[in-house]
Length: 221
Image (cartoon, rainbow, N blue to C red; front, top):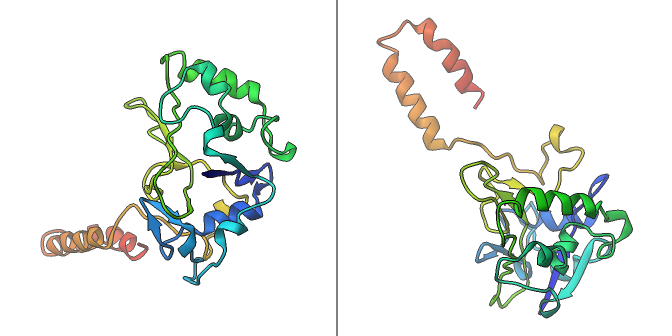
């Protein structure tokens, strides 16, 4: 059973392969256990993308047999993490990834030692999905980066909440919103309806001038 690691970004931003793979994760595609079903992938316009699995290849796409990955399904010691093939690829060790995608592994090693293993004897387990009968794709992202709970990096289906996606940020992303980027709002149509009802209930009580700023704000939502 093969697992492909996709390094979606380099120092210039998203790679073409990374942009293609991440673009398949959209509301039109089919999903299995929260992962994209690559046999039923669609683009951002809802058109079928045939041969998606085969198309995800080239520089930055590293295939490894599941049995060769190392320890899976359990937390690891610091030494095990630093020698784990999967983590070495994700941390972009120069011996594991193409030169143009490699990073300073010593910096990652120091960070892991200070931040993670100064508190825990075992952590950073790798738990790849299993039992799926079709090739699937997940975006690896981090969550719970606060002081209240343990952080984690995973590929579940919660990419539209307050978690952070670790795939990198394309240079054009902060200033552009196109068909491949969906705007995620912190409110729903039901929230807006509740707001409208509340304002209407105040119209006969408060001076209309006091409500005008709220009405102007509402017109922008």
